Amino acid sequence: MKLLKKFKTTDVRVKLAQKNIIGLFFNKIFALLVSFQLIPATIGYVDTEQYGIWIAISSVAAWMLYFDFGLTHGFRNGFATAKAKGDVLLAKQYISTTYIILILIFSILLVIGLIANNWLSWSSMLSVDSNLDEVLNNVFAILIIFLSVQMVGNIFTTFLLAVQKPAMSATIATIGQFFALIAIYGLTFFTKGNLTYLAFALMGIPALIIVLISVFYFKTKFKEYAPSVYNINWSLTKSILGLGSRFFIIQLSMLFVFQFANFIIIRVMGANAVTNYNVAYRYYSIIYVLMGIVFLPFWSAFTEAYAKREFEWMKKTYSKLSKIWLLTFAIFIGLLLISPVVYKYWLAKNLEVNYGLAIAIGINMIILSRANLYMYCLNGIGKIYLQMLIYALFALISAPLMYYLTSIWGYYGVIFVTSLVYFSQAFVGHIQLNKILKNNDNGIWSK
Image (cartoon, rainbow, N blue to C red; front, side, top):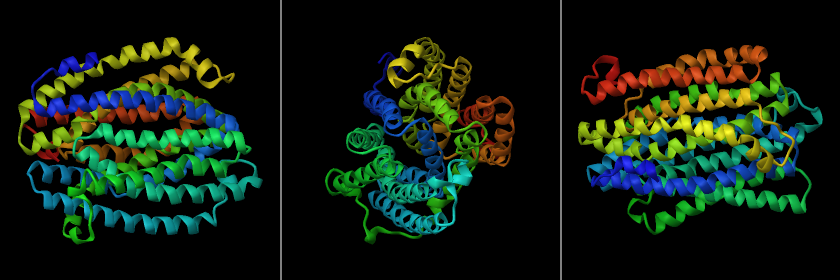
C-alpha cells in the first residue's frame, strides 16, 4: 500500500478514496485470481478452438452493452451532483427515471436481437463448421437475454460508484465471476464441452446475482434511495441524456474501435489466434487493472469537487495520480520477466510466450492507463466533448484499418490502431485537463 502514502492527508474526500483503493486492491487480487482461473477452466471444459469461437461470439453480443445511450454515466454524474447538494428527492428521481428508461430500451433491443438471431448464420460470419449454426444461435440468444438483464442491474453498481463506493461495486462483479467459475468446474465433472451450458454459466449467473444483490440492498442499507414508480420524473430524461448522449456516442464509437478486434483476428488469423491474443491481453491487463484501482475512486470525487469549485484540490490530486502512473513501466517489466513461469502454471498448456506480442500489449496497456487517468478526471467533471470527437473520428477508420493492418502485421495491426486511439485521447486530455485546472478552458476546451 505504498501508493497510498502519496495521498497522506486529513481530507475527507481523499480518505474515502483511500478506503476504496484498499478495498479495490484486495478485491482485484481475488478478481484476478478468479479471472485467470476462468481461462484454463473454460479451455479445459471446451477446447482452444471452441474457446476462440466463444470469445468471438460473446464479443459481438457484448455490443449491446454500448446501447444504454450513455444513461448510466449521465445518471452517475447527475445523481452525484444532486447528492453533493443534499437534494435526496432529486437523487431518488434520477435513479428511478434511469431504471425505467433502461428497462424500456433493453426490452426493445432484446426483441430485435432475438428476431435478428433467427436469420443469422454464425458459421459463415465466424468462418467455422456450418454444423455449429444451431448451437451458436442458441448461445447468442442466451447471451443477449442475460446481457439485457445485466445492463438494467448495472444501474445499482453505477449507483455505488456515484455514492463513492467503487470497492463495493467491484465486489459484486467479482462475486458473479466467482460463482461462474464454480459452475464451470461443475460442468467439467458432469457434462462434456457444451457452448450452451458455458453461456448459461458465464453470463446467466453474474446477471442473476447482480439483480438479487441490488434488490436486497435497496430494501436495506440504501432504502433511502430505492427506486420507485412514484419517483419517476420524465423531465430528467433530458438532463440524463444531455451528458449521457455524449457518453453514448463515445461508447458507440468504442464499439467500432475495440469490439471488432477479436472478430477481425478470427477472420484473418483463425480461432486459435484469438485465444493467444486474449491470453496475453488478459495477463498484461494487470497494468490497467492496478491503475484502475487507484484512479476509479476519483471519478465521483472530481464530480463533487468541481461542483464545489475546489480547483486547488483537483490540481494536487491530479499531480499525485500522475506520479503513481509512472509505476506502470516497472509493473510491465516485472510481468514480462515472470511471464514464462506464469504461463506454464497458469494455463497448464503448451502455449509459449510470444515476446513481441507481450511487449506490444504491454505498451498498449501503459498508454491506456495514462489515457484513463484523463478520462476519469474529465468524465467526473462532465467535460467529454473532445473525447467524443476523438472516438467518433476513429470509429470511422478503425475497423477497415485494423483489418488491413492485421492482414499484413497479424496481431500488431489491431494493437497499433488501439494504441493510436489511446495516445490521441491522452494527448488531448492532457491539454484540456490542464486548461480546466487553471480555469482557462475557453471555447471547445470547456465542453
